Length: 131
Image (cartoon, rainbow, N blue to C red; front, side, top):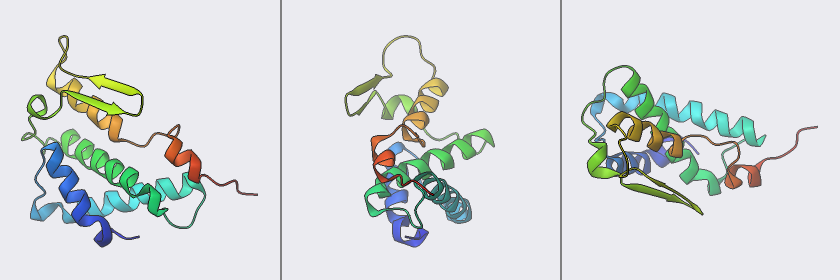
């Protein structure tokens, strides 16, 4: 699969997180997509990202893209308090609305949930041994 196949899904996912893709983001998104695809391909020892991992790839791309935007000072419009109160992933629940957690801490917790996780059952299911 290539970037044009998942571009709309990535754009929609970023919008659901609170980031509107701008015209100048195309190169960066394409670059991050290739980097994330390669990471999954190498981890799973396959030649293409399996179709079952599209959602994992989309979240991974969004996390890496937003992390790069934040680290370069280009990300200021996401209001994380209004978007994320809790994230449920399987039997794990992360709540952000409790305690004294800063907006930056909430943002990075969200990115960590979306990022590449080598212990993810989805990734491990597709992992192949190379002889």
